[in-house]
Length: 237
Ligand code: F8G
Image (cartoon, rainbow, N blue to C red):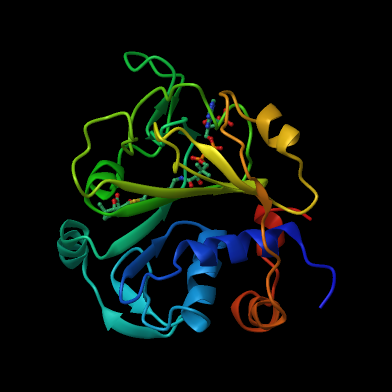
């Protein structure tokens, strides 16, 4: 299949977040992570449970297949068999995330979502982040408020910030000091571009190119999961 878009590369990169997850509750926030989780369920991870973020478990095509009320979500959060993919208004080199406020905490210039589930998620189970517009404003030297907890904080034994997928690259924290590194750049993106769009120094050794979706994955994305191509609005071609 031809004409693979950046959005489709990002969906496959988000699907790969769940490799080996098995019977785990996937809680993807936003369209691209959600397409990724649904794609993983249809391909490599048939036991993945897909949360609608509110009260139900859904099949990849959004048929209700289970009831998971809010209080039960907290049980799963505490138990740890969950992988949340959150957004981030800011994320720093150690994976601290901010979705709460911009500016001085005493007098923020922007009030955002609030802390939400971010602190509890990050200390209890695997967390990844999705950044649709990789820029120095988002990939910052230091977040203004810590919502999701990073590797430089005493976060306990279950802390596991797995990866950051952006519209430019896949990044992780598999370095000796858990400083963010580039795992792969998406086709058509250079390491220099990723560095220019990041406010801190990224580790960049053995960087590969993010894989393309397979023909089967493209077929699923284009005909079953997102026939209206809403993905292109989040990550323009
Ligand atoms: C900025 C910046 C920046 C934004 N620097 N300015 C400005 C400077 C921007 C705009 C304005 C708005 C467990 C669980 C839960 C639960 C339970 C259970 C969760 C506890 C369920 C319910 C609950 C979910 C956590 C997410 C979603 C994160 C996104 C956003 C986004 C864009 C980040 C992509 N850096 N940034 N500004 N939720 N959000 O110029 O100014 O601010 O900006 O898990 O909930 O409660 O807990 O954010 O921002 O993961 O992904 O979509 O808000 O849209 O509009 O760009 O234009 O107004 O002047 P956004 P944006 P202006 S876990």
